[in-house]
Amino acid sequence: MSEVVSYAAGALITTLTHPLGYAKVLIQLGHEPLIPYLSKELISRRERWYYPNILKYLGHIKKRDGFLGLWRGFVPQLMESVVRTYVTHSLTEELKKRYPIKENEDKTEVVVFLKQFGIKTSREVVAKSVAIVCSQPFQVIAIRTMAQFIGEETMYNNIFSSISEIYRLEGFSGFFAGLVPRLIGEAITIALINLLSDLLNEYLVEDKEYRSYTAIACNLAVSQVTYPFVLVSRIMCVNNSGLAAASPPYMMYFANWRDCWTNLKKTGELNRGSSMFWRVCHSLDKHSKRYNPPIEPYRKYSSL
Image (cartoon, rainbow, N blue to C red; front, side, top):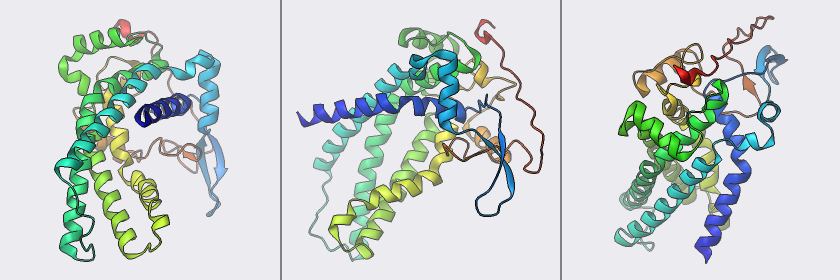
């Protein structure tokens, strides 16, 4: 019964937060339909260009597609979340039984500490990696469905047409576009969170009541470090998909995820979309007083 409640709660959270995730995906893909504005930084007081915050971005989506348009791509995103959560939970429980950690061991010994860290991290990496592989096709479909907002295509309107379109264009490998950077980012995230939280709990946080919050705090810090992997993965989900969002003049074609990473690094956009409110416009010179609007996307690009 508790598992049913947990899944129901997860589904409810996914439903309520989907519009924010949808807008974030469009931002990650580089779609900026709203005009930037000049504002001064809080500390240095120098002027910089900023994009309107994500709430105004949601207003733009609602204005064009209506209220229900804010849930574009919700069904495949929900399926991705359910599959990932179920596989992660099931596999984690199984791995805990096969590779248990002895709680009575003295963690102050370095060898014991590293042993327990290795077991716990390995279990989580394996469970979440398998879950990501199983759920990646739904992730690809969800992101491509959302990306259609940019060029107004209709290639990915439902699960079945999306499966057919991906297989026709890219074959079986198309369902796992963006998988490698997502797996690498997840593995690094898990390792860093476990290492930092274990170190803090063992040597700094004495009160057991507060130890449960350590992992949450570490997650917030580490997620900023590994965010580029998330960004690259989502961009690669639409790469060579035939959508306007993944084609010139909006986006160049990438040979692989490393090529995408290199290009984003050169343009200073490896953290594009990481902030929802203070969104710096890196493409404009910070001293410029003039703004040139972006090139409009090709309409009905899917006909090509």
